Length: 250
Image 1: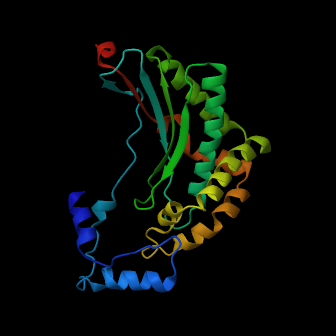
Image 2 (image 1 turned 180 degrees about the vertical axis):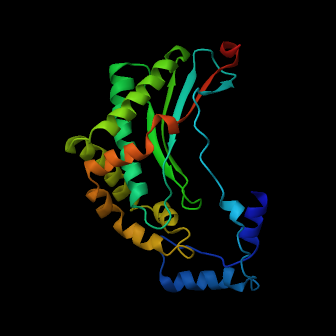
Image 3 (image 1 turned 90 degrees about the vertical axis):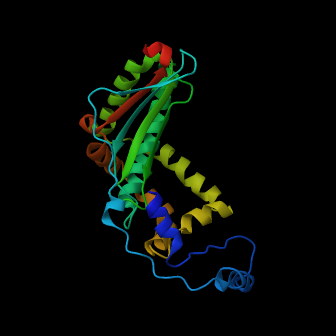
């Protein structure tokens, strides 16, 4: 990883993003007087294929047991499933992300409202813009250690529910609204644009991806969410872990 970082920053073109209340003329002048005055850089070295060889961990039949040094009554349960990347066509990754929003609604309803075992259970999804085929969806809970077994059973039941039947339009719209409104608010900030446009020189598809994200999210159907759950949320693909206090583990 150190070698990859050194090679990436030591040679090749420098991508500069300027966002905010600035004119094109002022941005060109500022970049020209700073980065533009640097010596000519050599071409970027070819990235070795091994540098992109990142894979989701192998599934486990029993949770990986980790420990912490905090209070004995505090524990964490985690389950994740491999999904897909956000390279090129991002629709599958966006479906997986919206599927994770539905997971969030259901884990909140079940683990917090119905069972009361956690105040803020979390579900989410991540998809890489660098490593091909790398992404995951997850459910995480902070809870007393005695509730961990029940958590994994509930996570499996929620995943099965998404696999077995399409979500109804109301639930999908609730999940979608959360994402869409978050993006609309973020678009009024500079950090959003810095992140959204990062790397567009190497991947021009990012421009269109920024433009079409809202319309694409609005077009995702309940059937696509179910198909994603059937493809990704299989119990034999899951990686699970627990984190409990060292004293309790002993």
